[in-house]
Length: 288
Image 1 (spheres, one colour):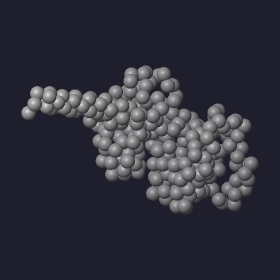
Image 2 (image 1 turned 180 degrees about the vertical axis):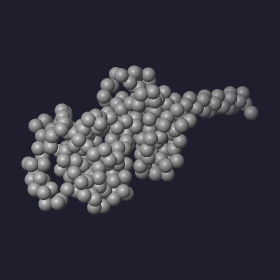
Image 3 (image 1 turned 45 degrees about the horizontal axis):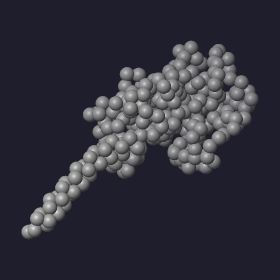
Image 4 (image 1 turned 180 degrees about the horizontal axis):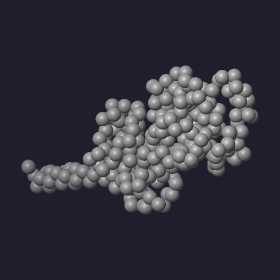
């Protein structure tokens, strides 16, 4: 072999080795970048060390645990078997390809790097359809306005009817005109049932309208929580569900996850009573 050929051989070997090192470095750099790309909203900044307080009510948090996130996978099987405990996170609920998780900010990148994870995002916030509430020892005006008093006088008082009331919370029940037999459940990530008094006011109204009905009060804080509440309502044969929560994130054509869940409940025989119209005089800026 000539001296030139030997040099060329050494040069090719060096180039190949350099390319291999570059590829390895690029792969190592690409892995965290790929995980970072899967974090949506303010989660990227939080994963990088930004304080949760910076986002105020923009993020749902559980004191002492972390932030509530929705982890979406590429398959139902991956979502069903995903393990988060070793990452310091808590699996709250699972549905289809999505798992709702309560996670410390330090674990967000590791969660995003799990196999088949396609996105880690904050859940859409739920908004009560009334900003001020009040309740006391009076009969709701709605009883007279809807002529429900005539129905009640005729014997229709909701006896043997199971009604579910879904809202952000039910604070002040001890001082409210709600039957003591009412069952109170929480689907919230923080386990609270007293985050708001809005649901208590709704429960008082329902109790006035149907004094003979059996009431179950379900606290929810995300769309996923409402979906689990709907599953509970359908599987436990409720006749009526009343909800005073809305989301202002589209799509608005009936294909939203929550709209489909409500349609499913209605097709199962549940009469769904939904608050709406509170934002009628405000302007929507966004994609239609």
